Length: 286
Image (tube, rainbow, N blue to C red; front, side, top):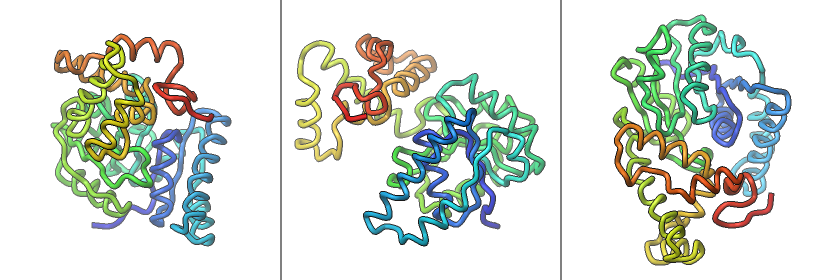
């Protein structure tokens, strides 16, 4: 199977910039689409800052950093993805936004064999696949944050996804230096189906006054050898993203453990989204 040499990434937030970075470091020509000039500039800064951190920590040589940056180009027009062999959307965790992006890509990409992957963390892939004219070429490819560090990718075939698409996506994951597991096309897949009830349980513990955020996090870090406590992890994920994932899972299963607690909803409404806003369950320098 031929390797991917031309990759598209739609969205250059935390996830999209991370995907673009690992692809560029793997020698792939990467074209990144964002909606506005400001978003492009923010994405470029995020990508450059991450590569500079890798340089300072001696994970990259200066020449490798420069070569990776040179492999990434930016656009505001999804029709510029026409020549891509594989495109990964990493836009907001919103069904309507993702559907619109995939429909536009479906029309824009000339090669009908090109794969369209969604980085959704909770939306059933089949719902997105059937919005296109190539449902057999649509698959979930769920990366984890931060993408340059986390080694796992969940491959999520829909009922409509063919075997060749799964094989090609697994091959791309290997190109990017990732390890892939195959997950069922059900909201939450494998990791979030186990993780989300745990995270929401920590929120409920704060909500009820049972324990302070710092004690919950320290307890899980020191008592269970977790690298990060559940509330710090929620702050890293983004409380708005966590709420969207929980709502999607609750919508599908109606399981009370998946329902976002009132405290989580109110923090999101107040703009306390975690690290990206400077305040969540903990305070951060912005």
